[in-house]
Image (cartoon, rainbow, N blue to C red; front, side):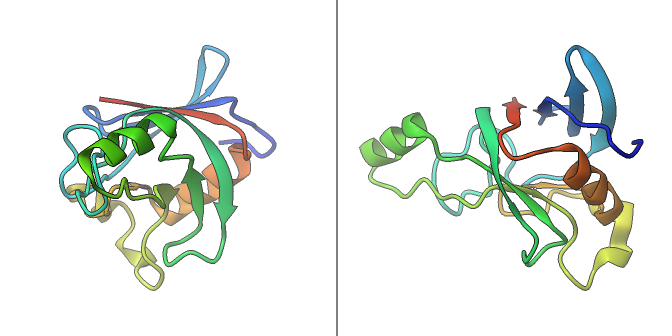
Length: 145
């Protein structure tokens, strides 16, 4: 991804295990990703190892993460909170796009062989560097089933 390129939308396709960076209708780059250990379906509660589905925002950056850099996703939204309240559970949170756990960056693309996060979207560290440059706080993210 060339320096200075900025995405205006992120689309994650859980069934295809991809993350797309978009500028208008053009795909800037496609990444292969890993999810939580139980990726099918929308996140219902804390600890279910699911990645939420729906439309959110990248609402902050976290450079001091336990993983190599992280872009925080605005889950839970009002609908997620209401559903969790009705079910009497915590919706969870701290859902992010992040690199490999600190100290294990050497794993690189091998991380894609299984879904290993607690519900986040994981990429390699060098891919995270590209996302860090191209995705700004406030960028919409759609996570599709």
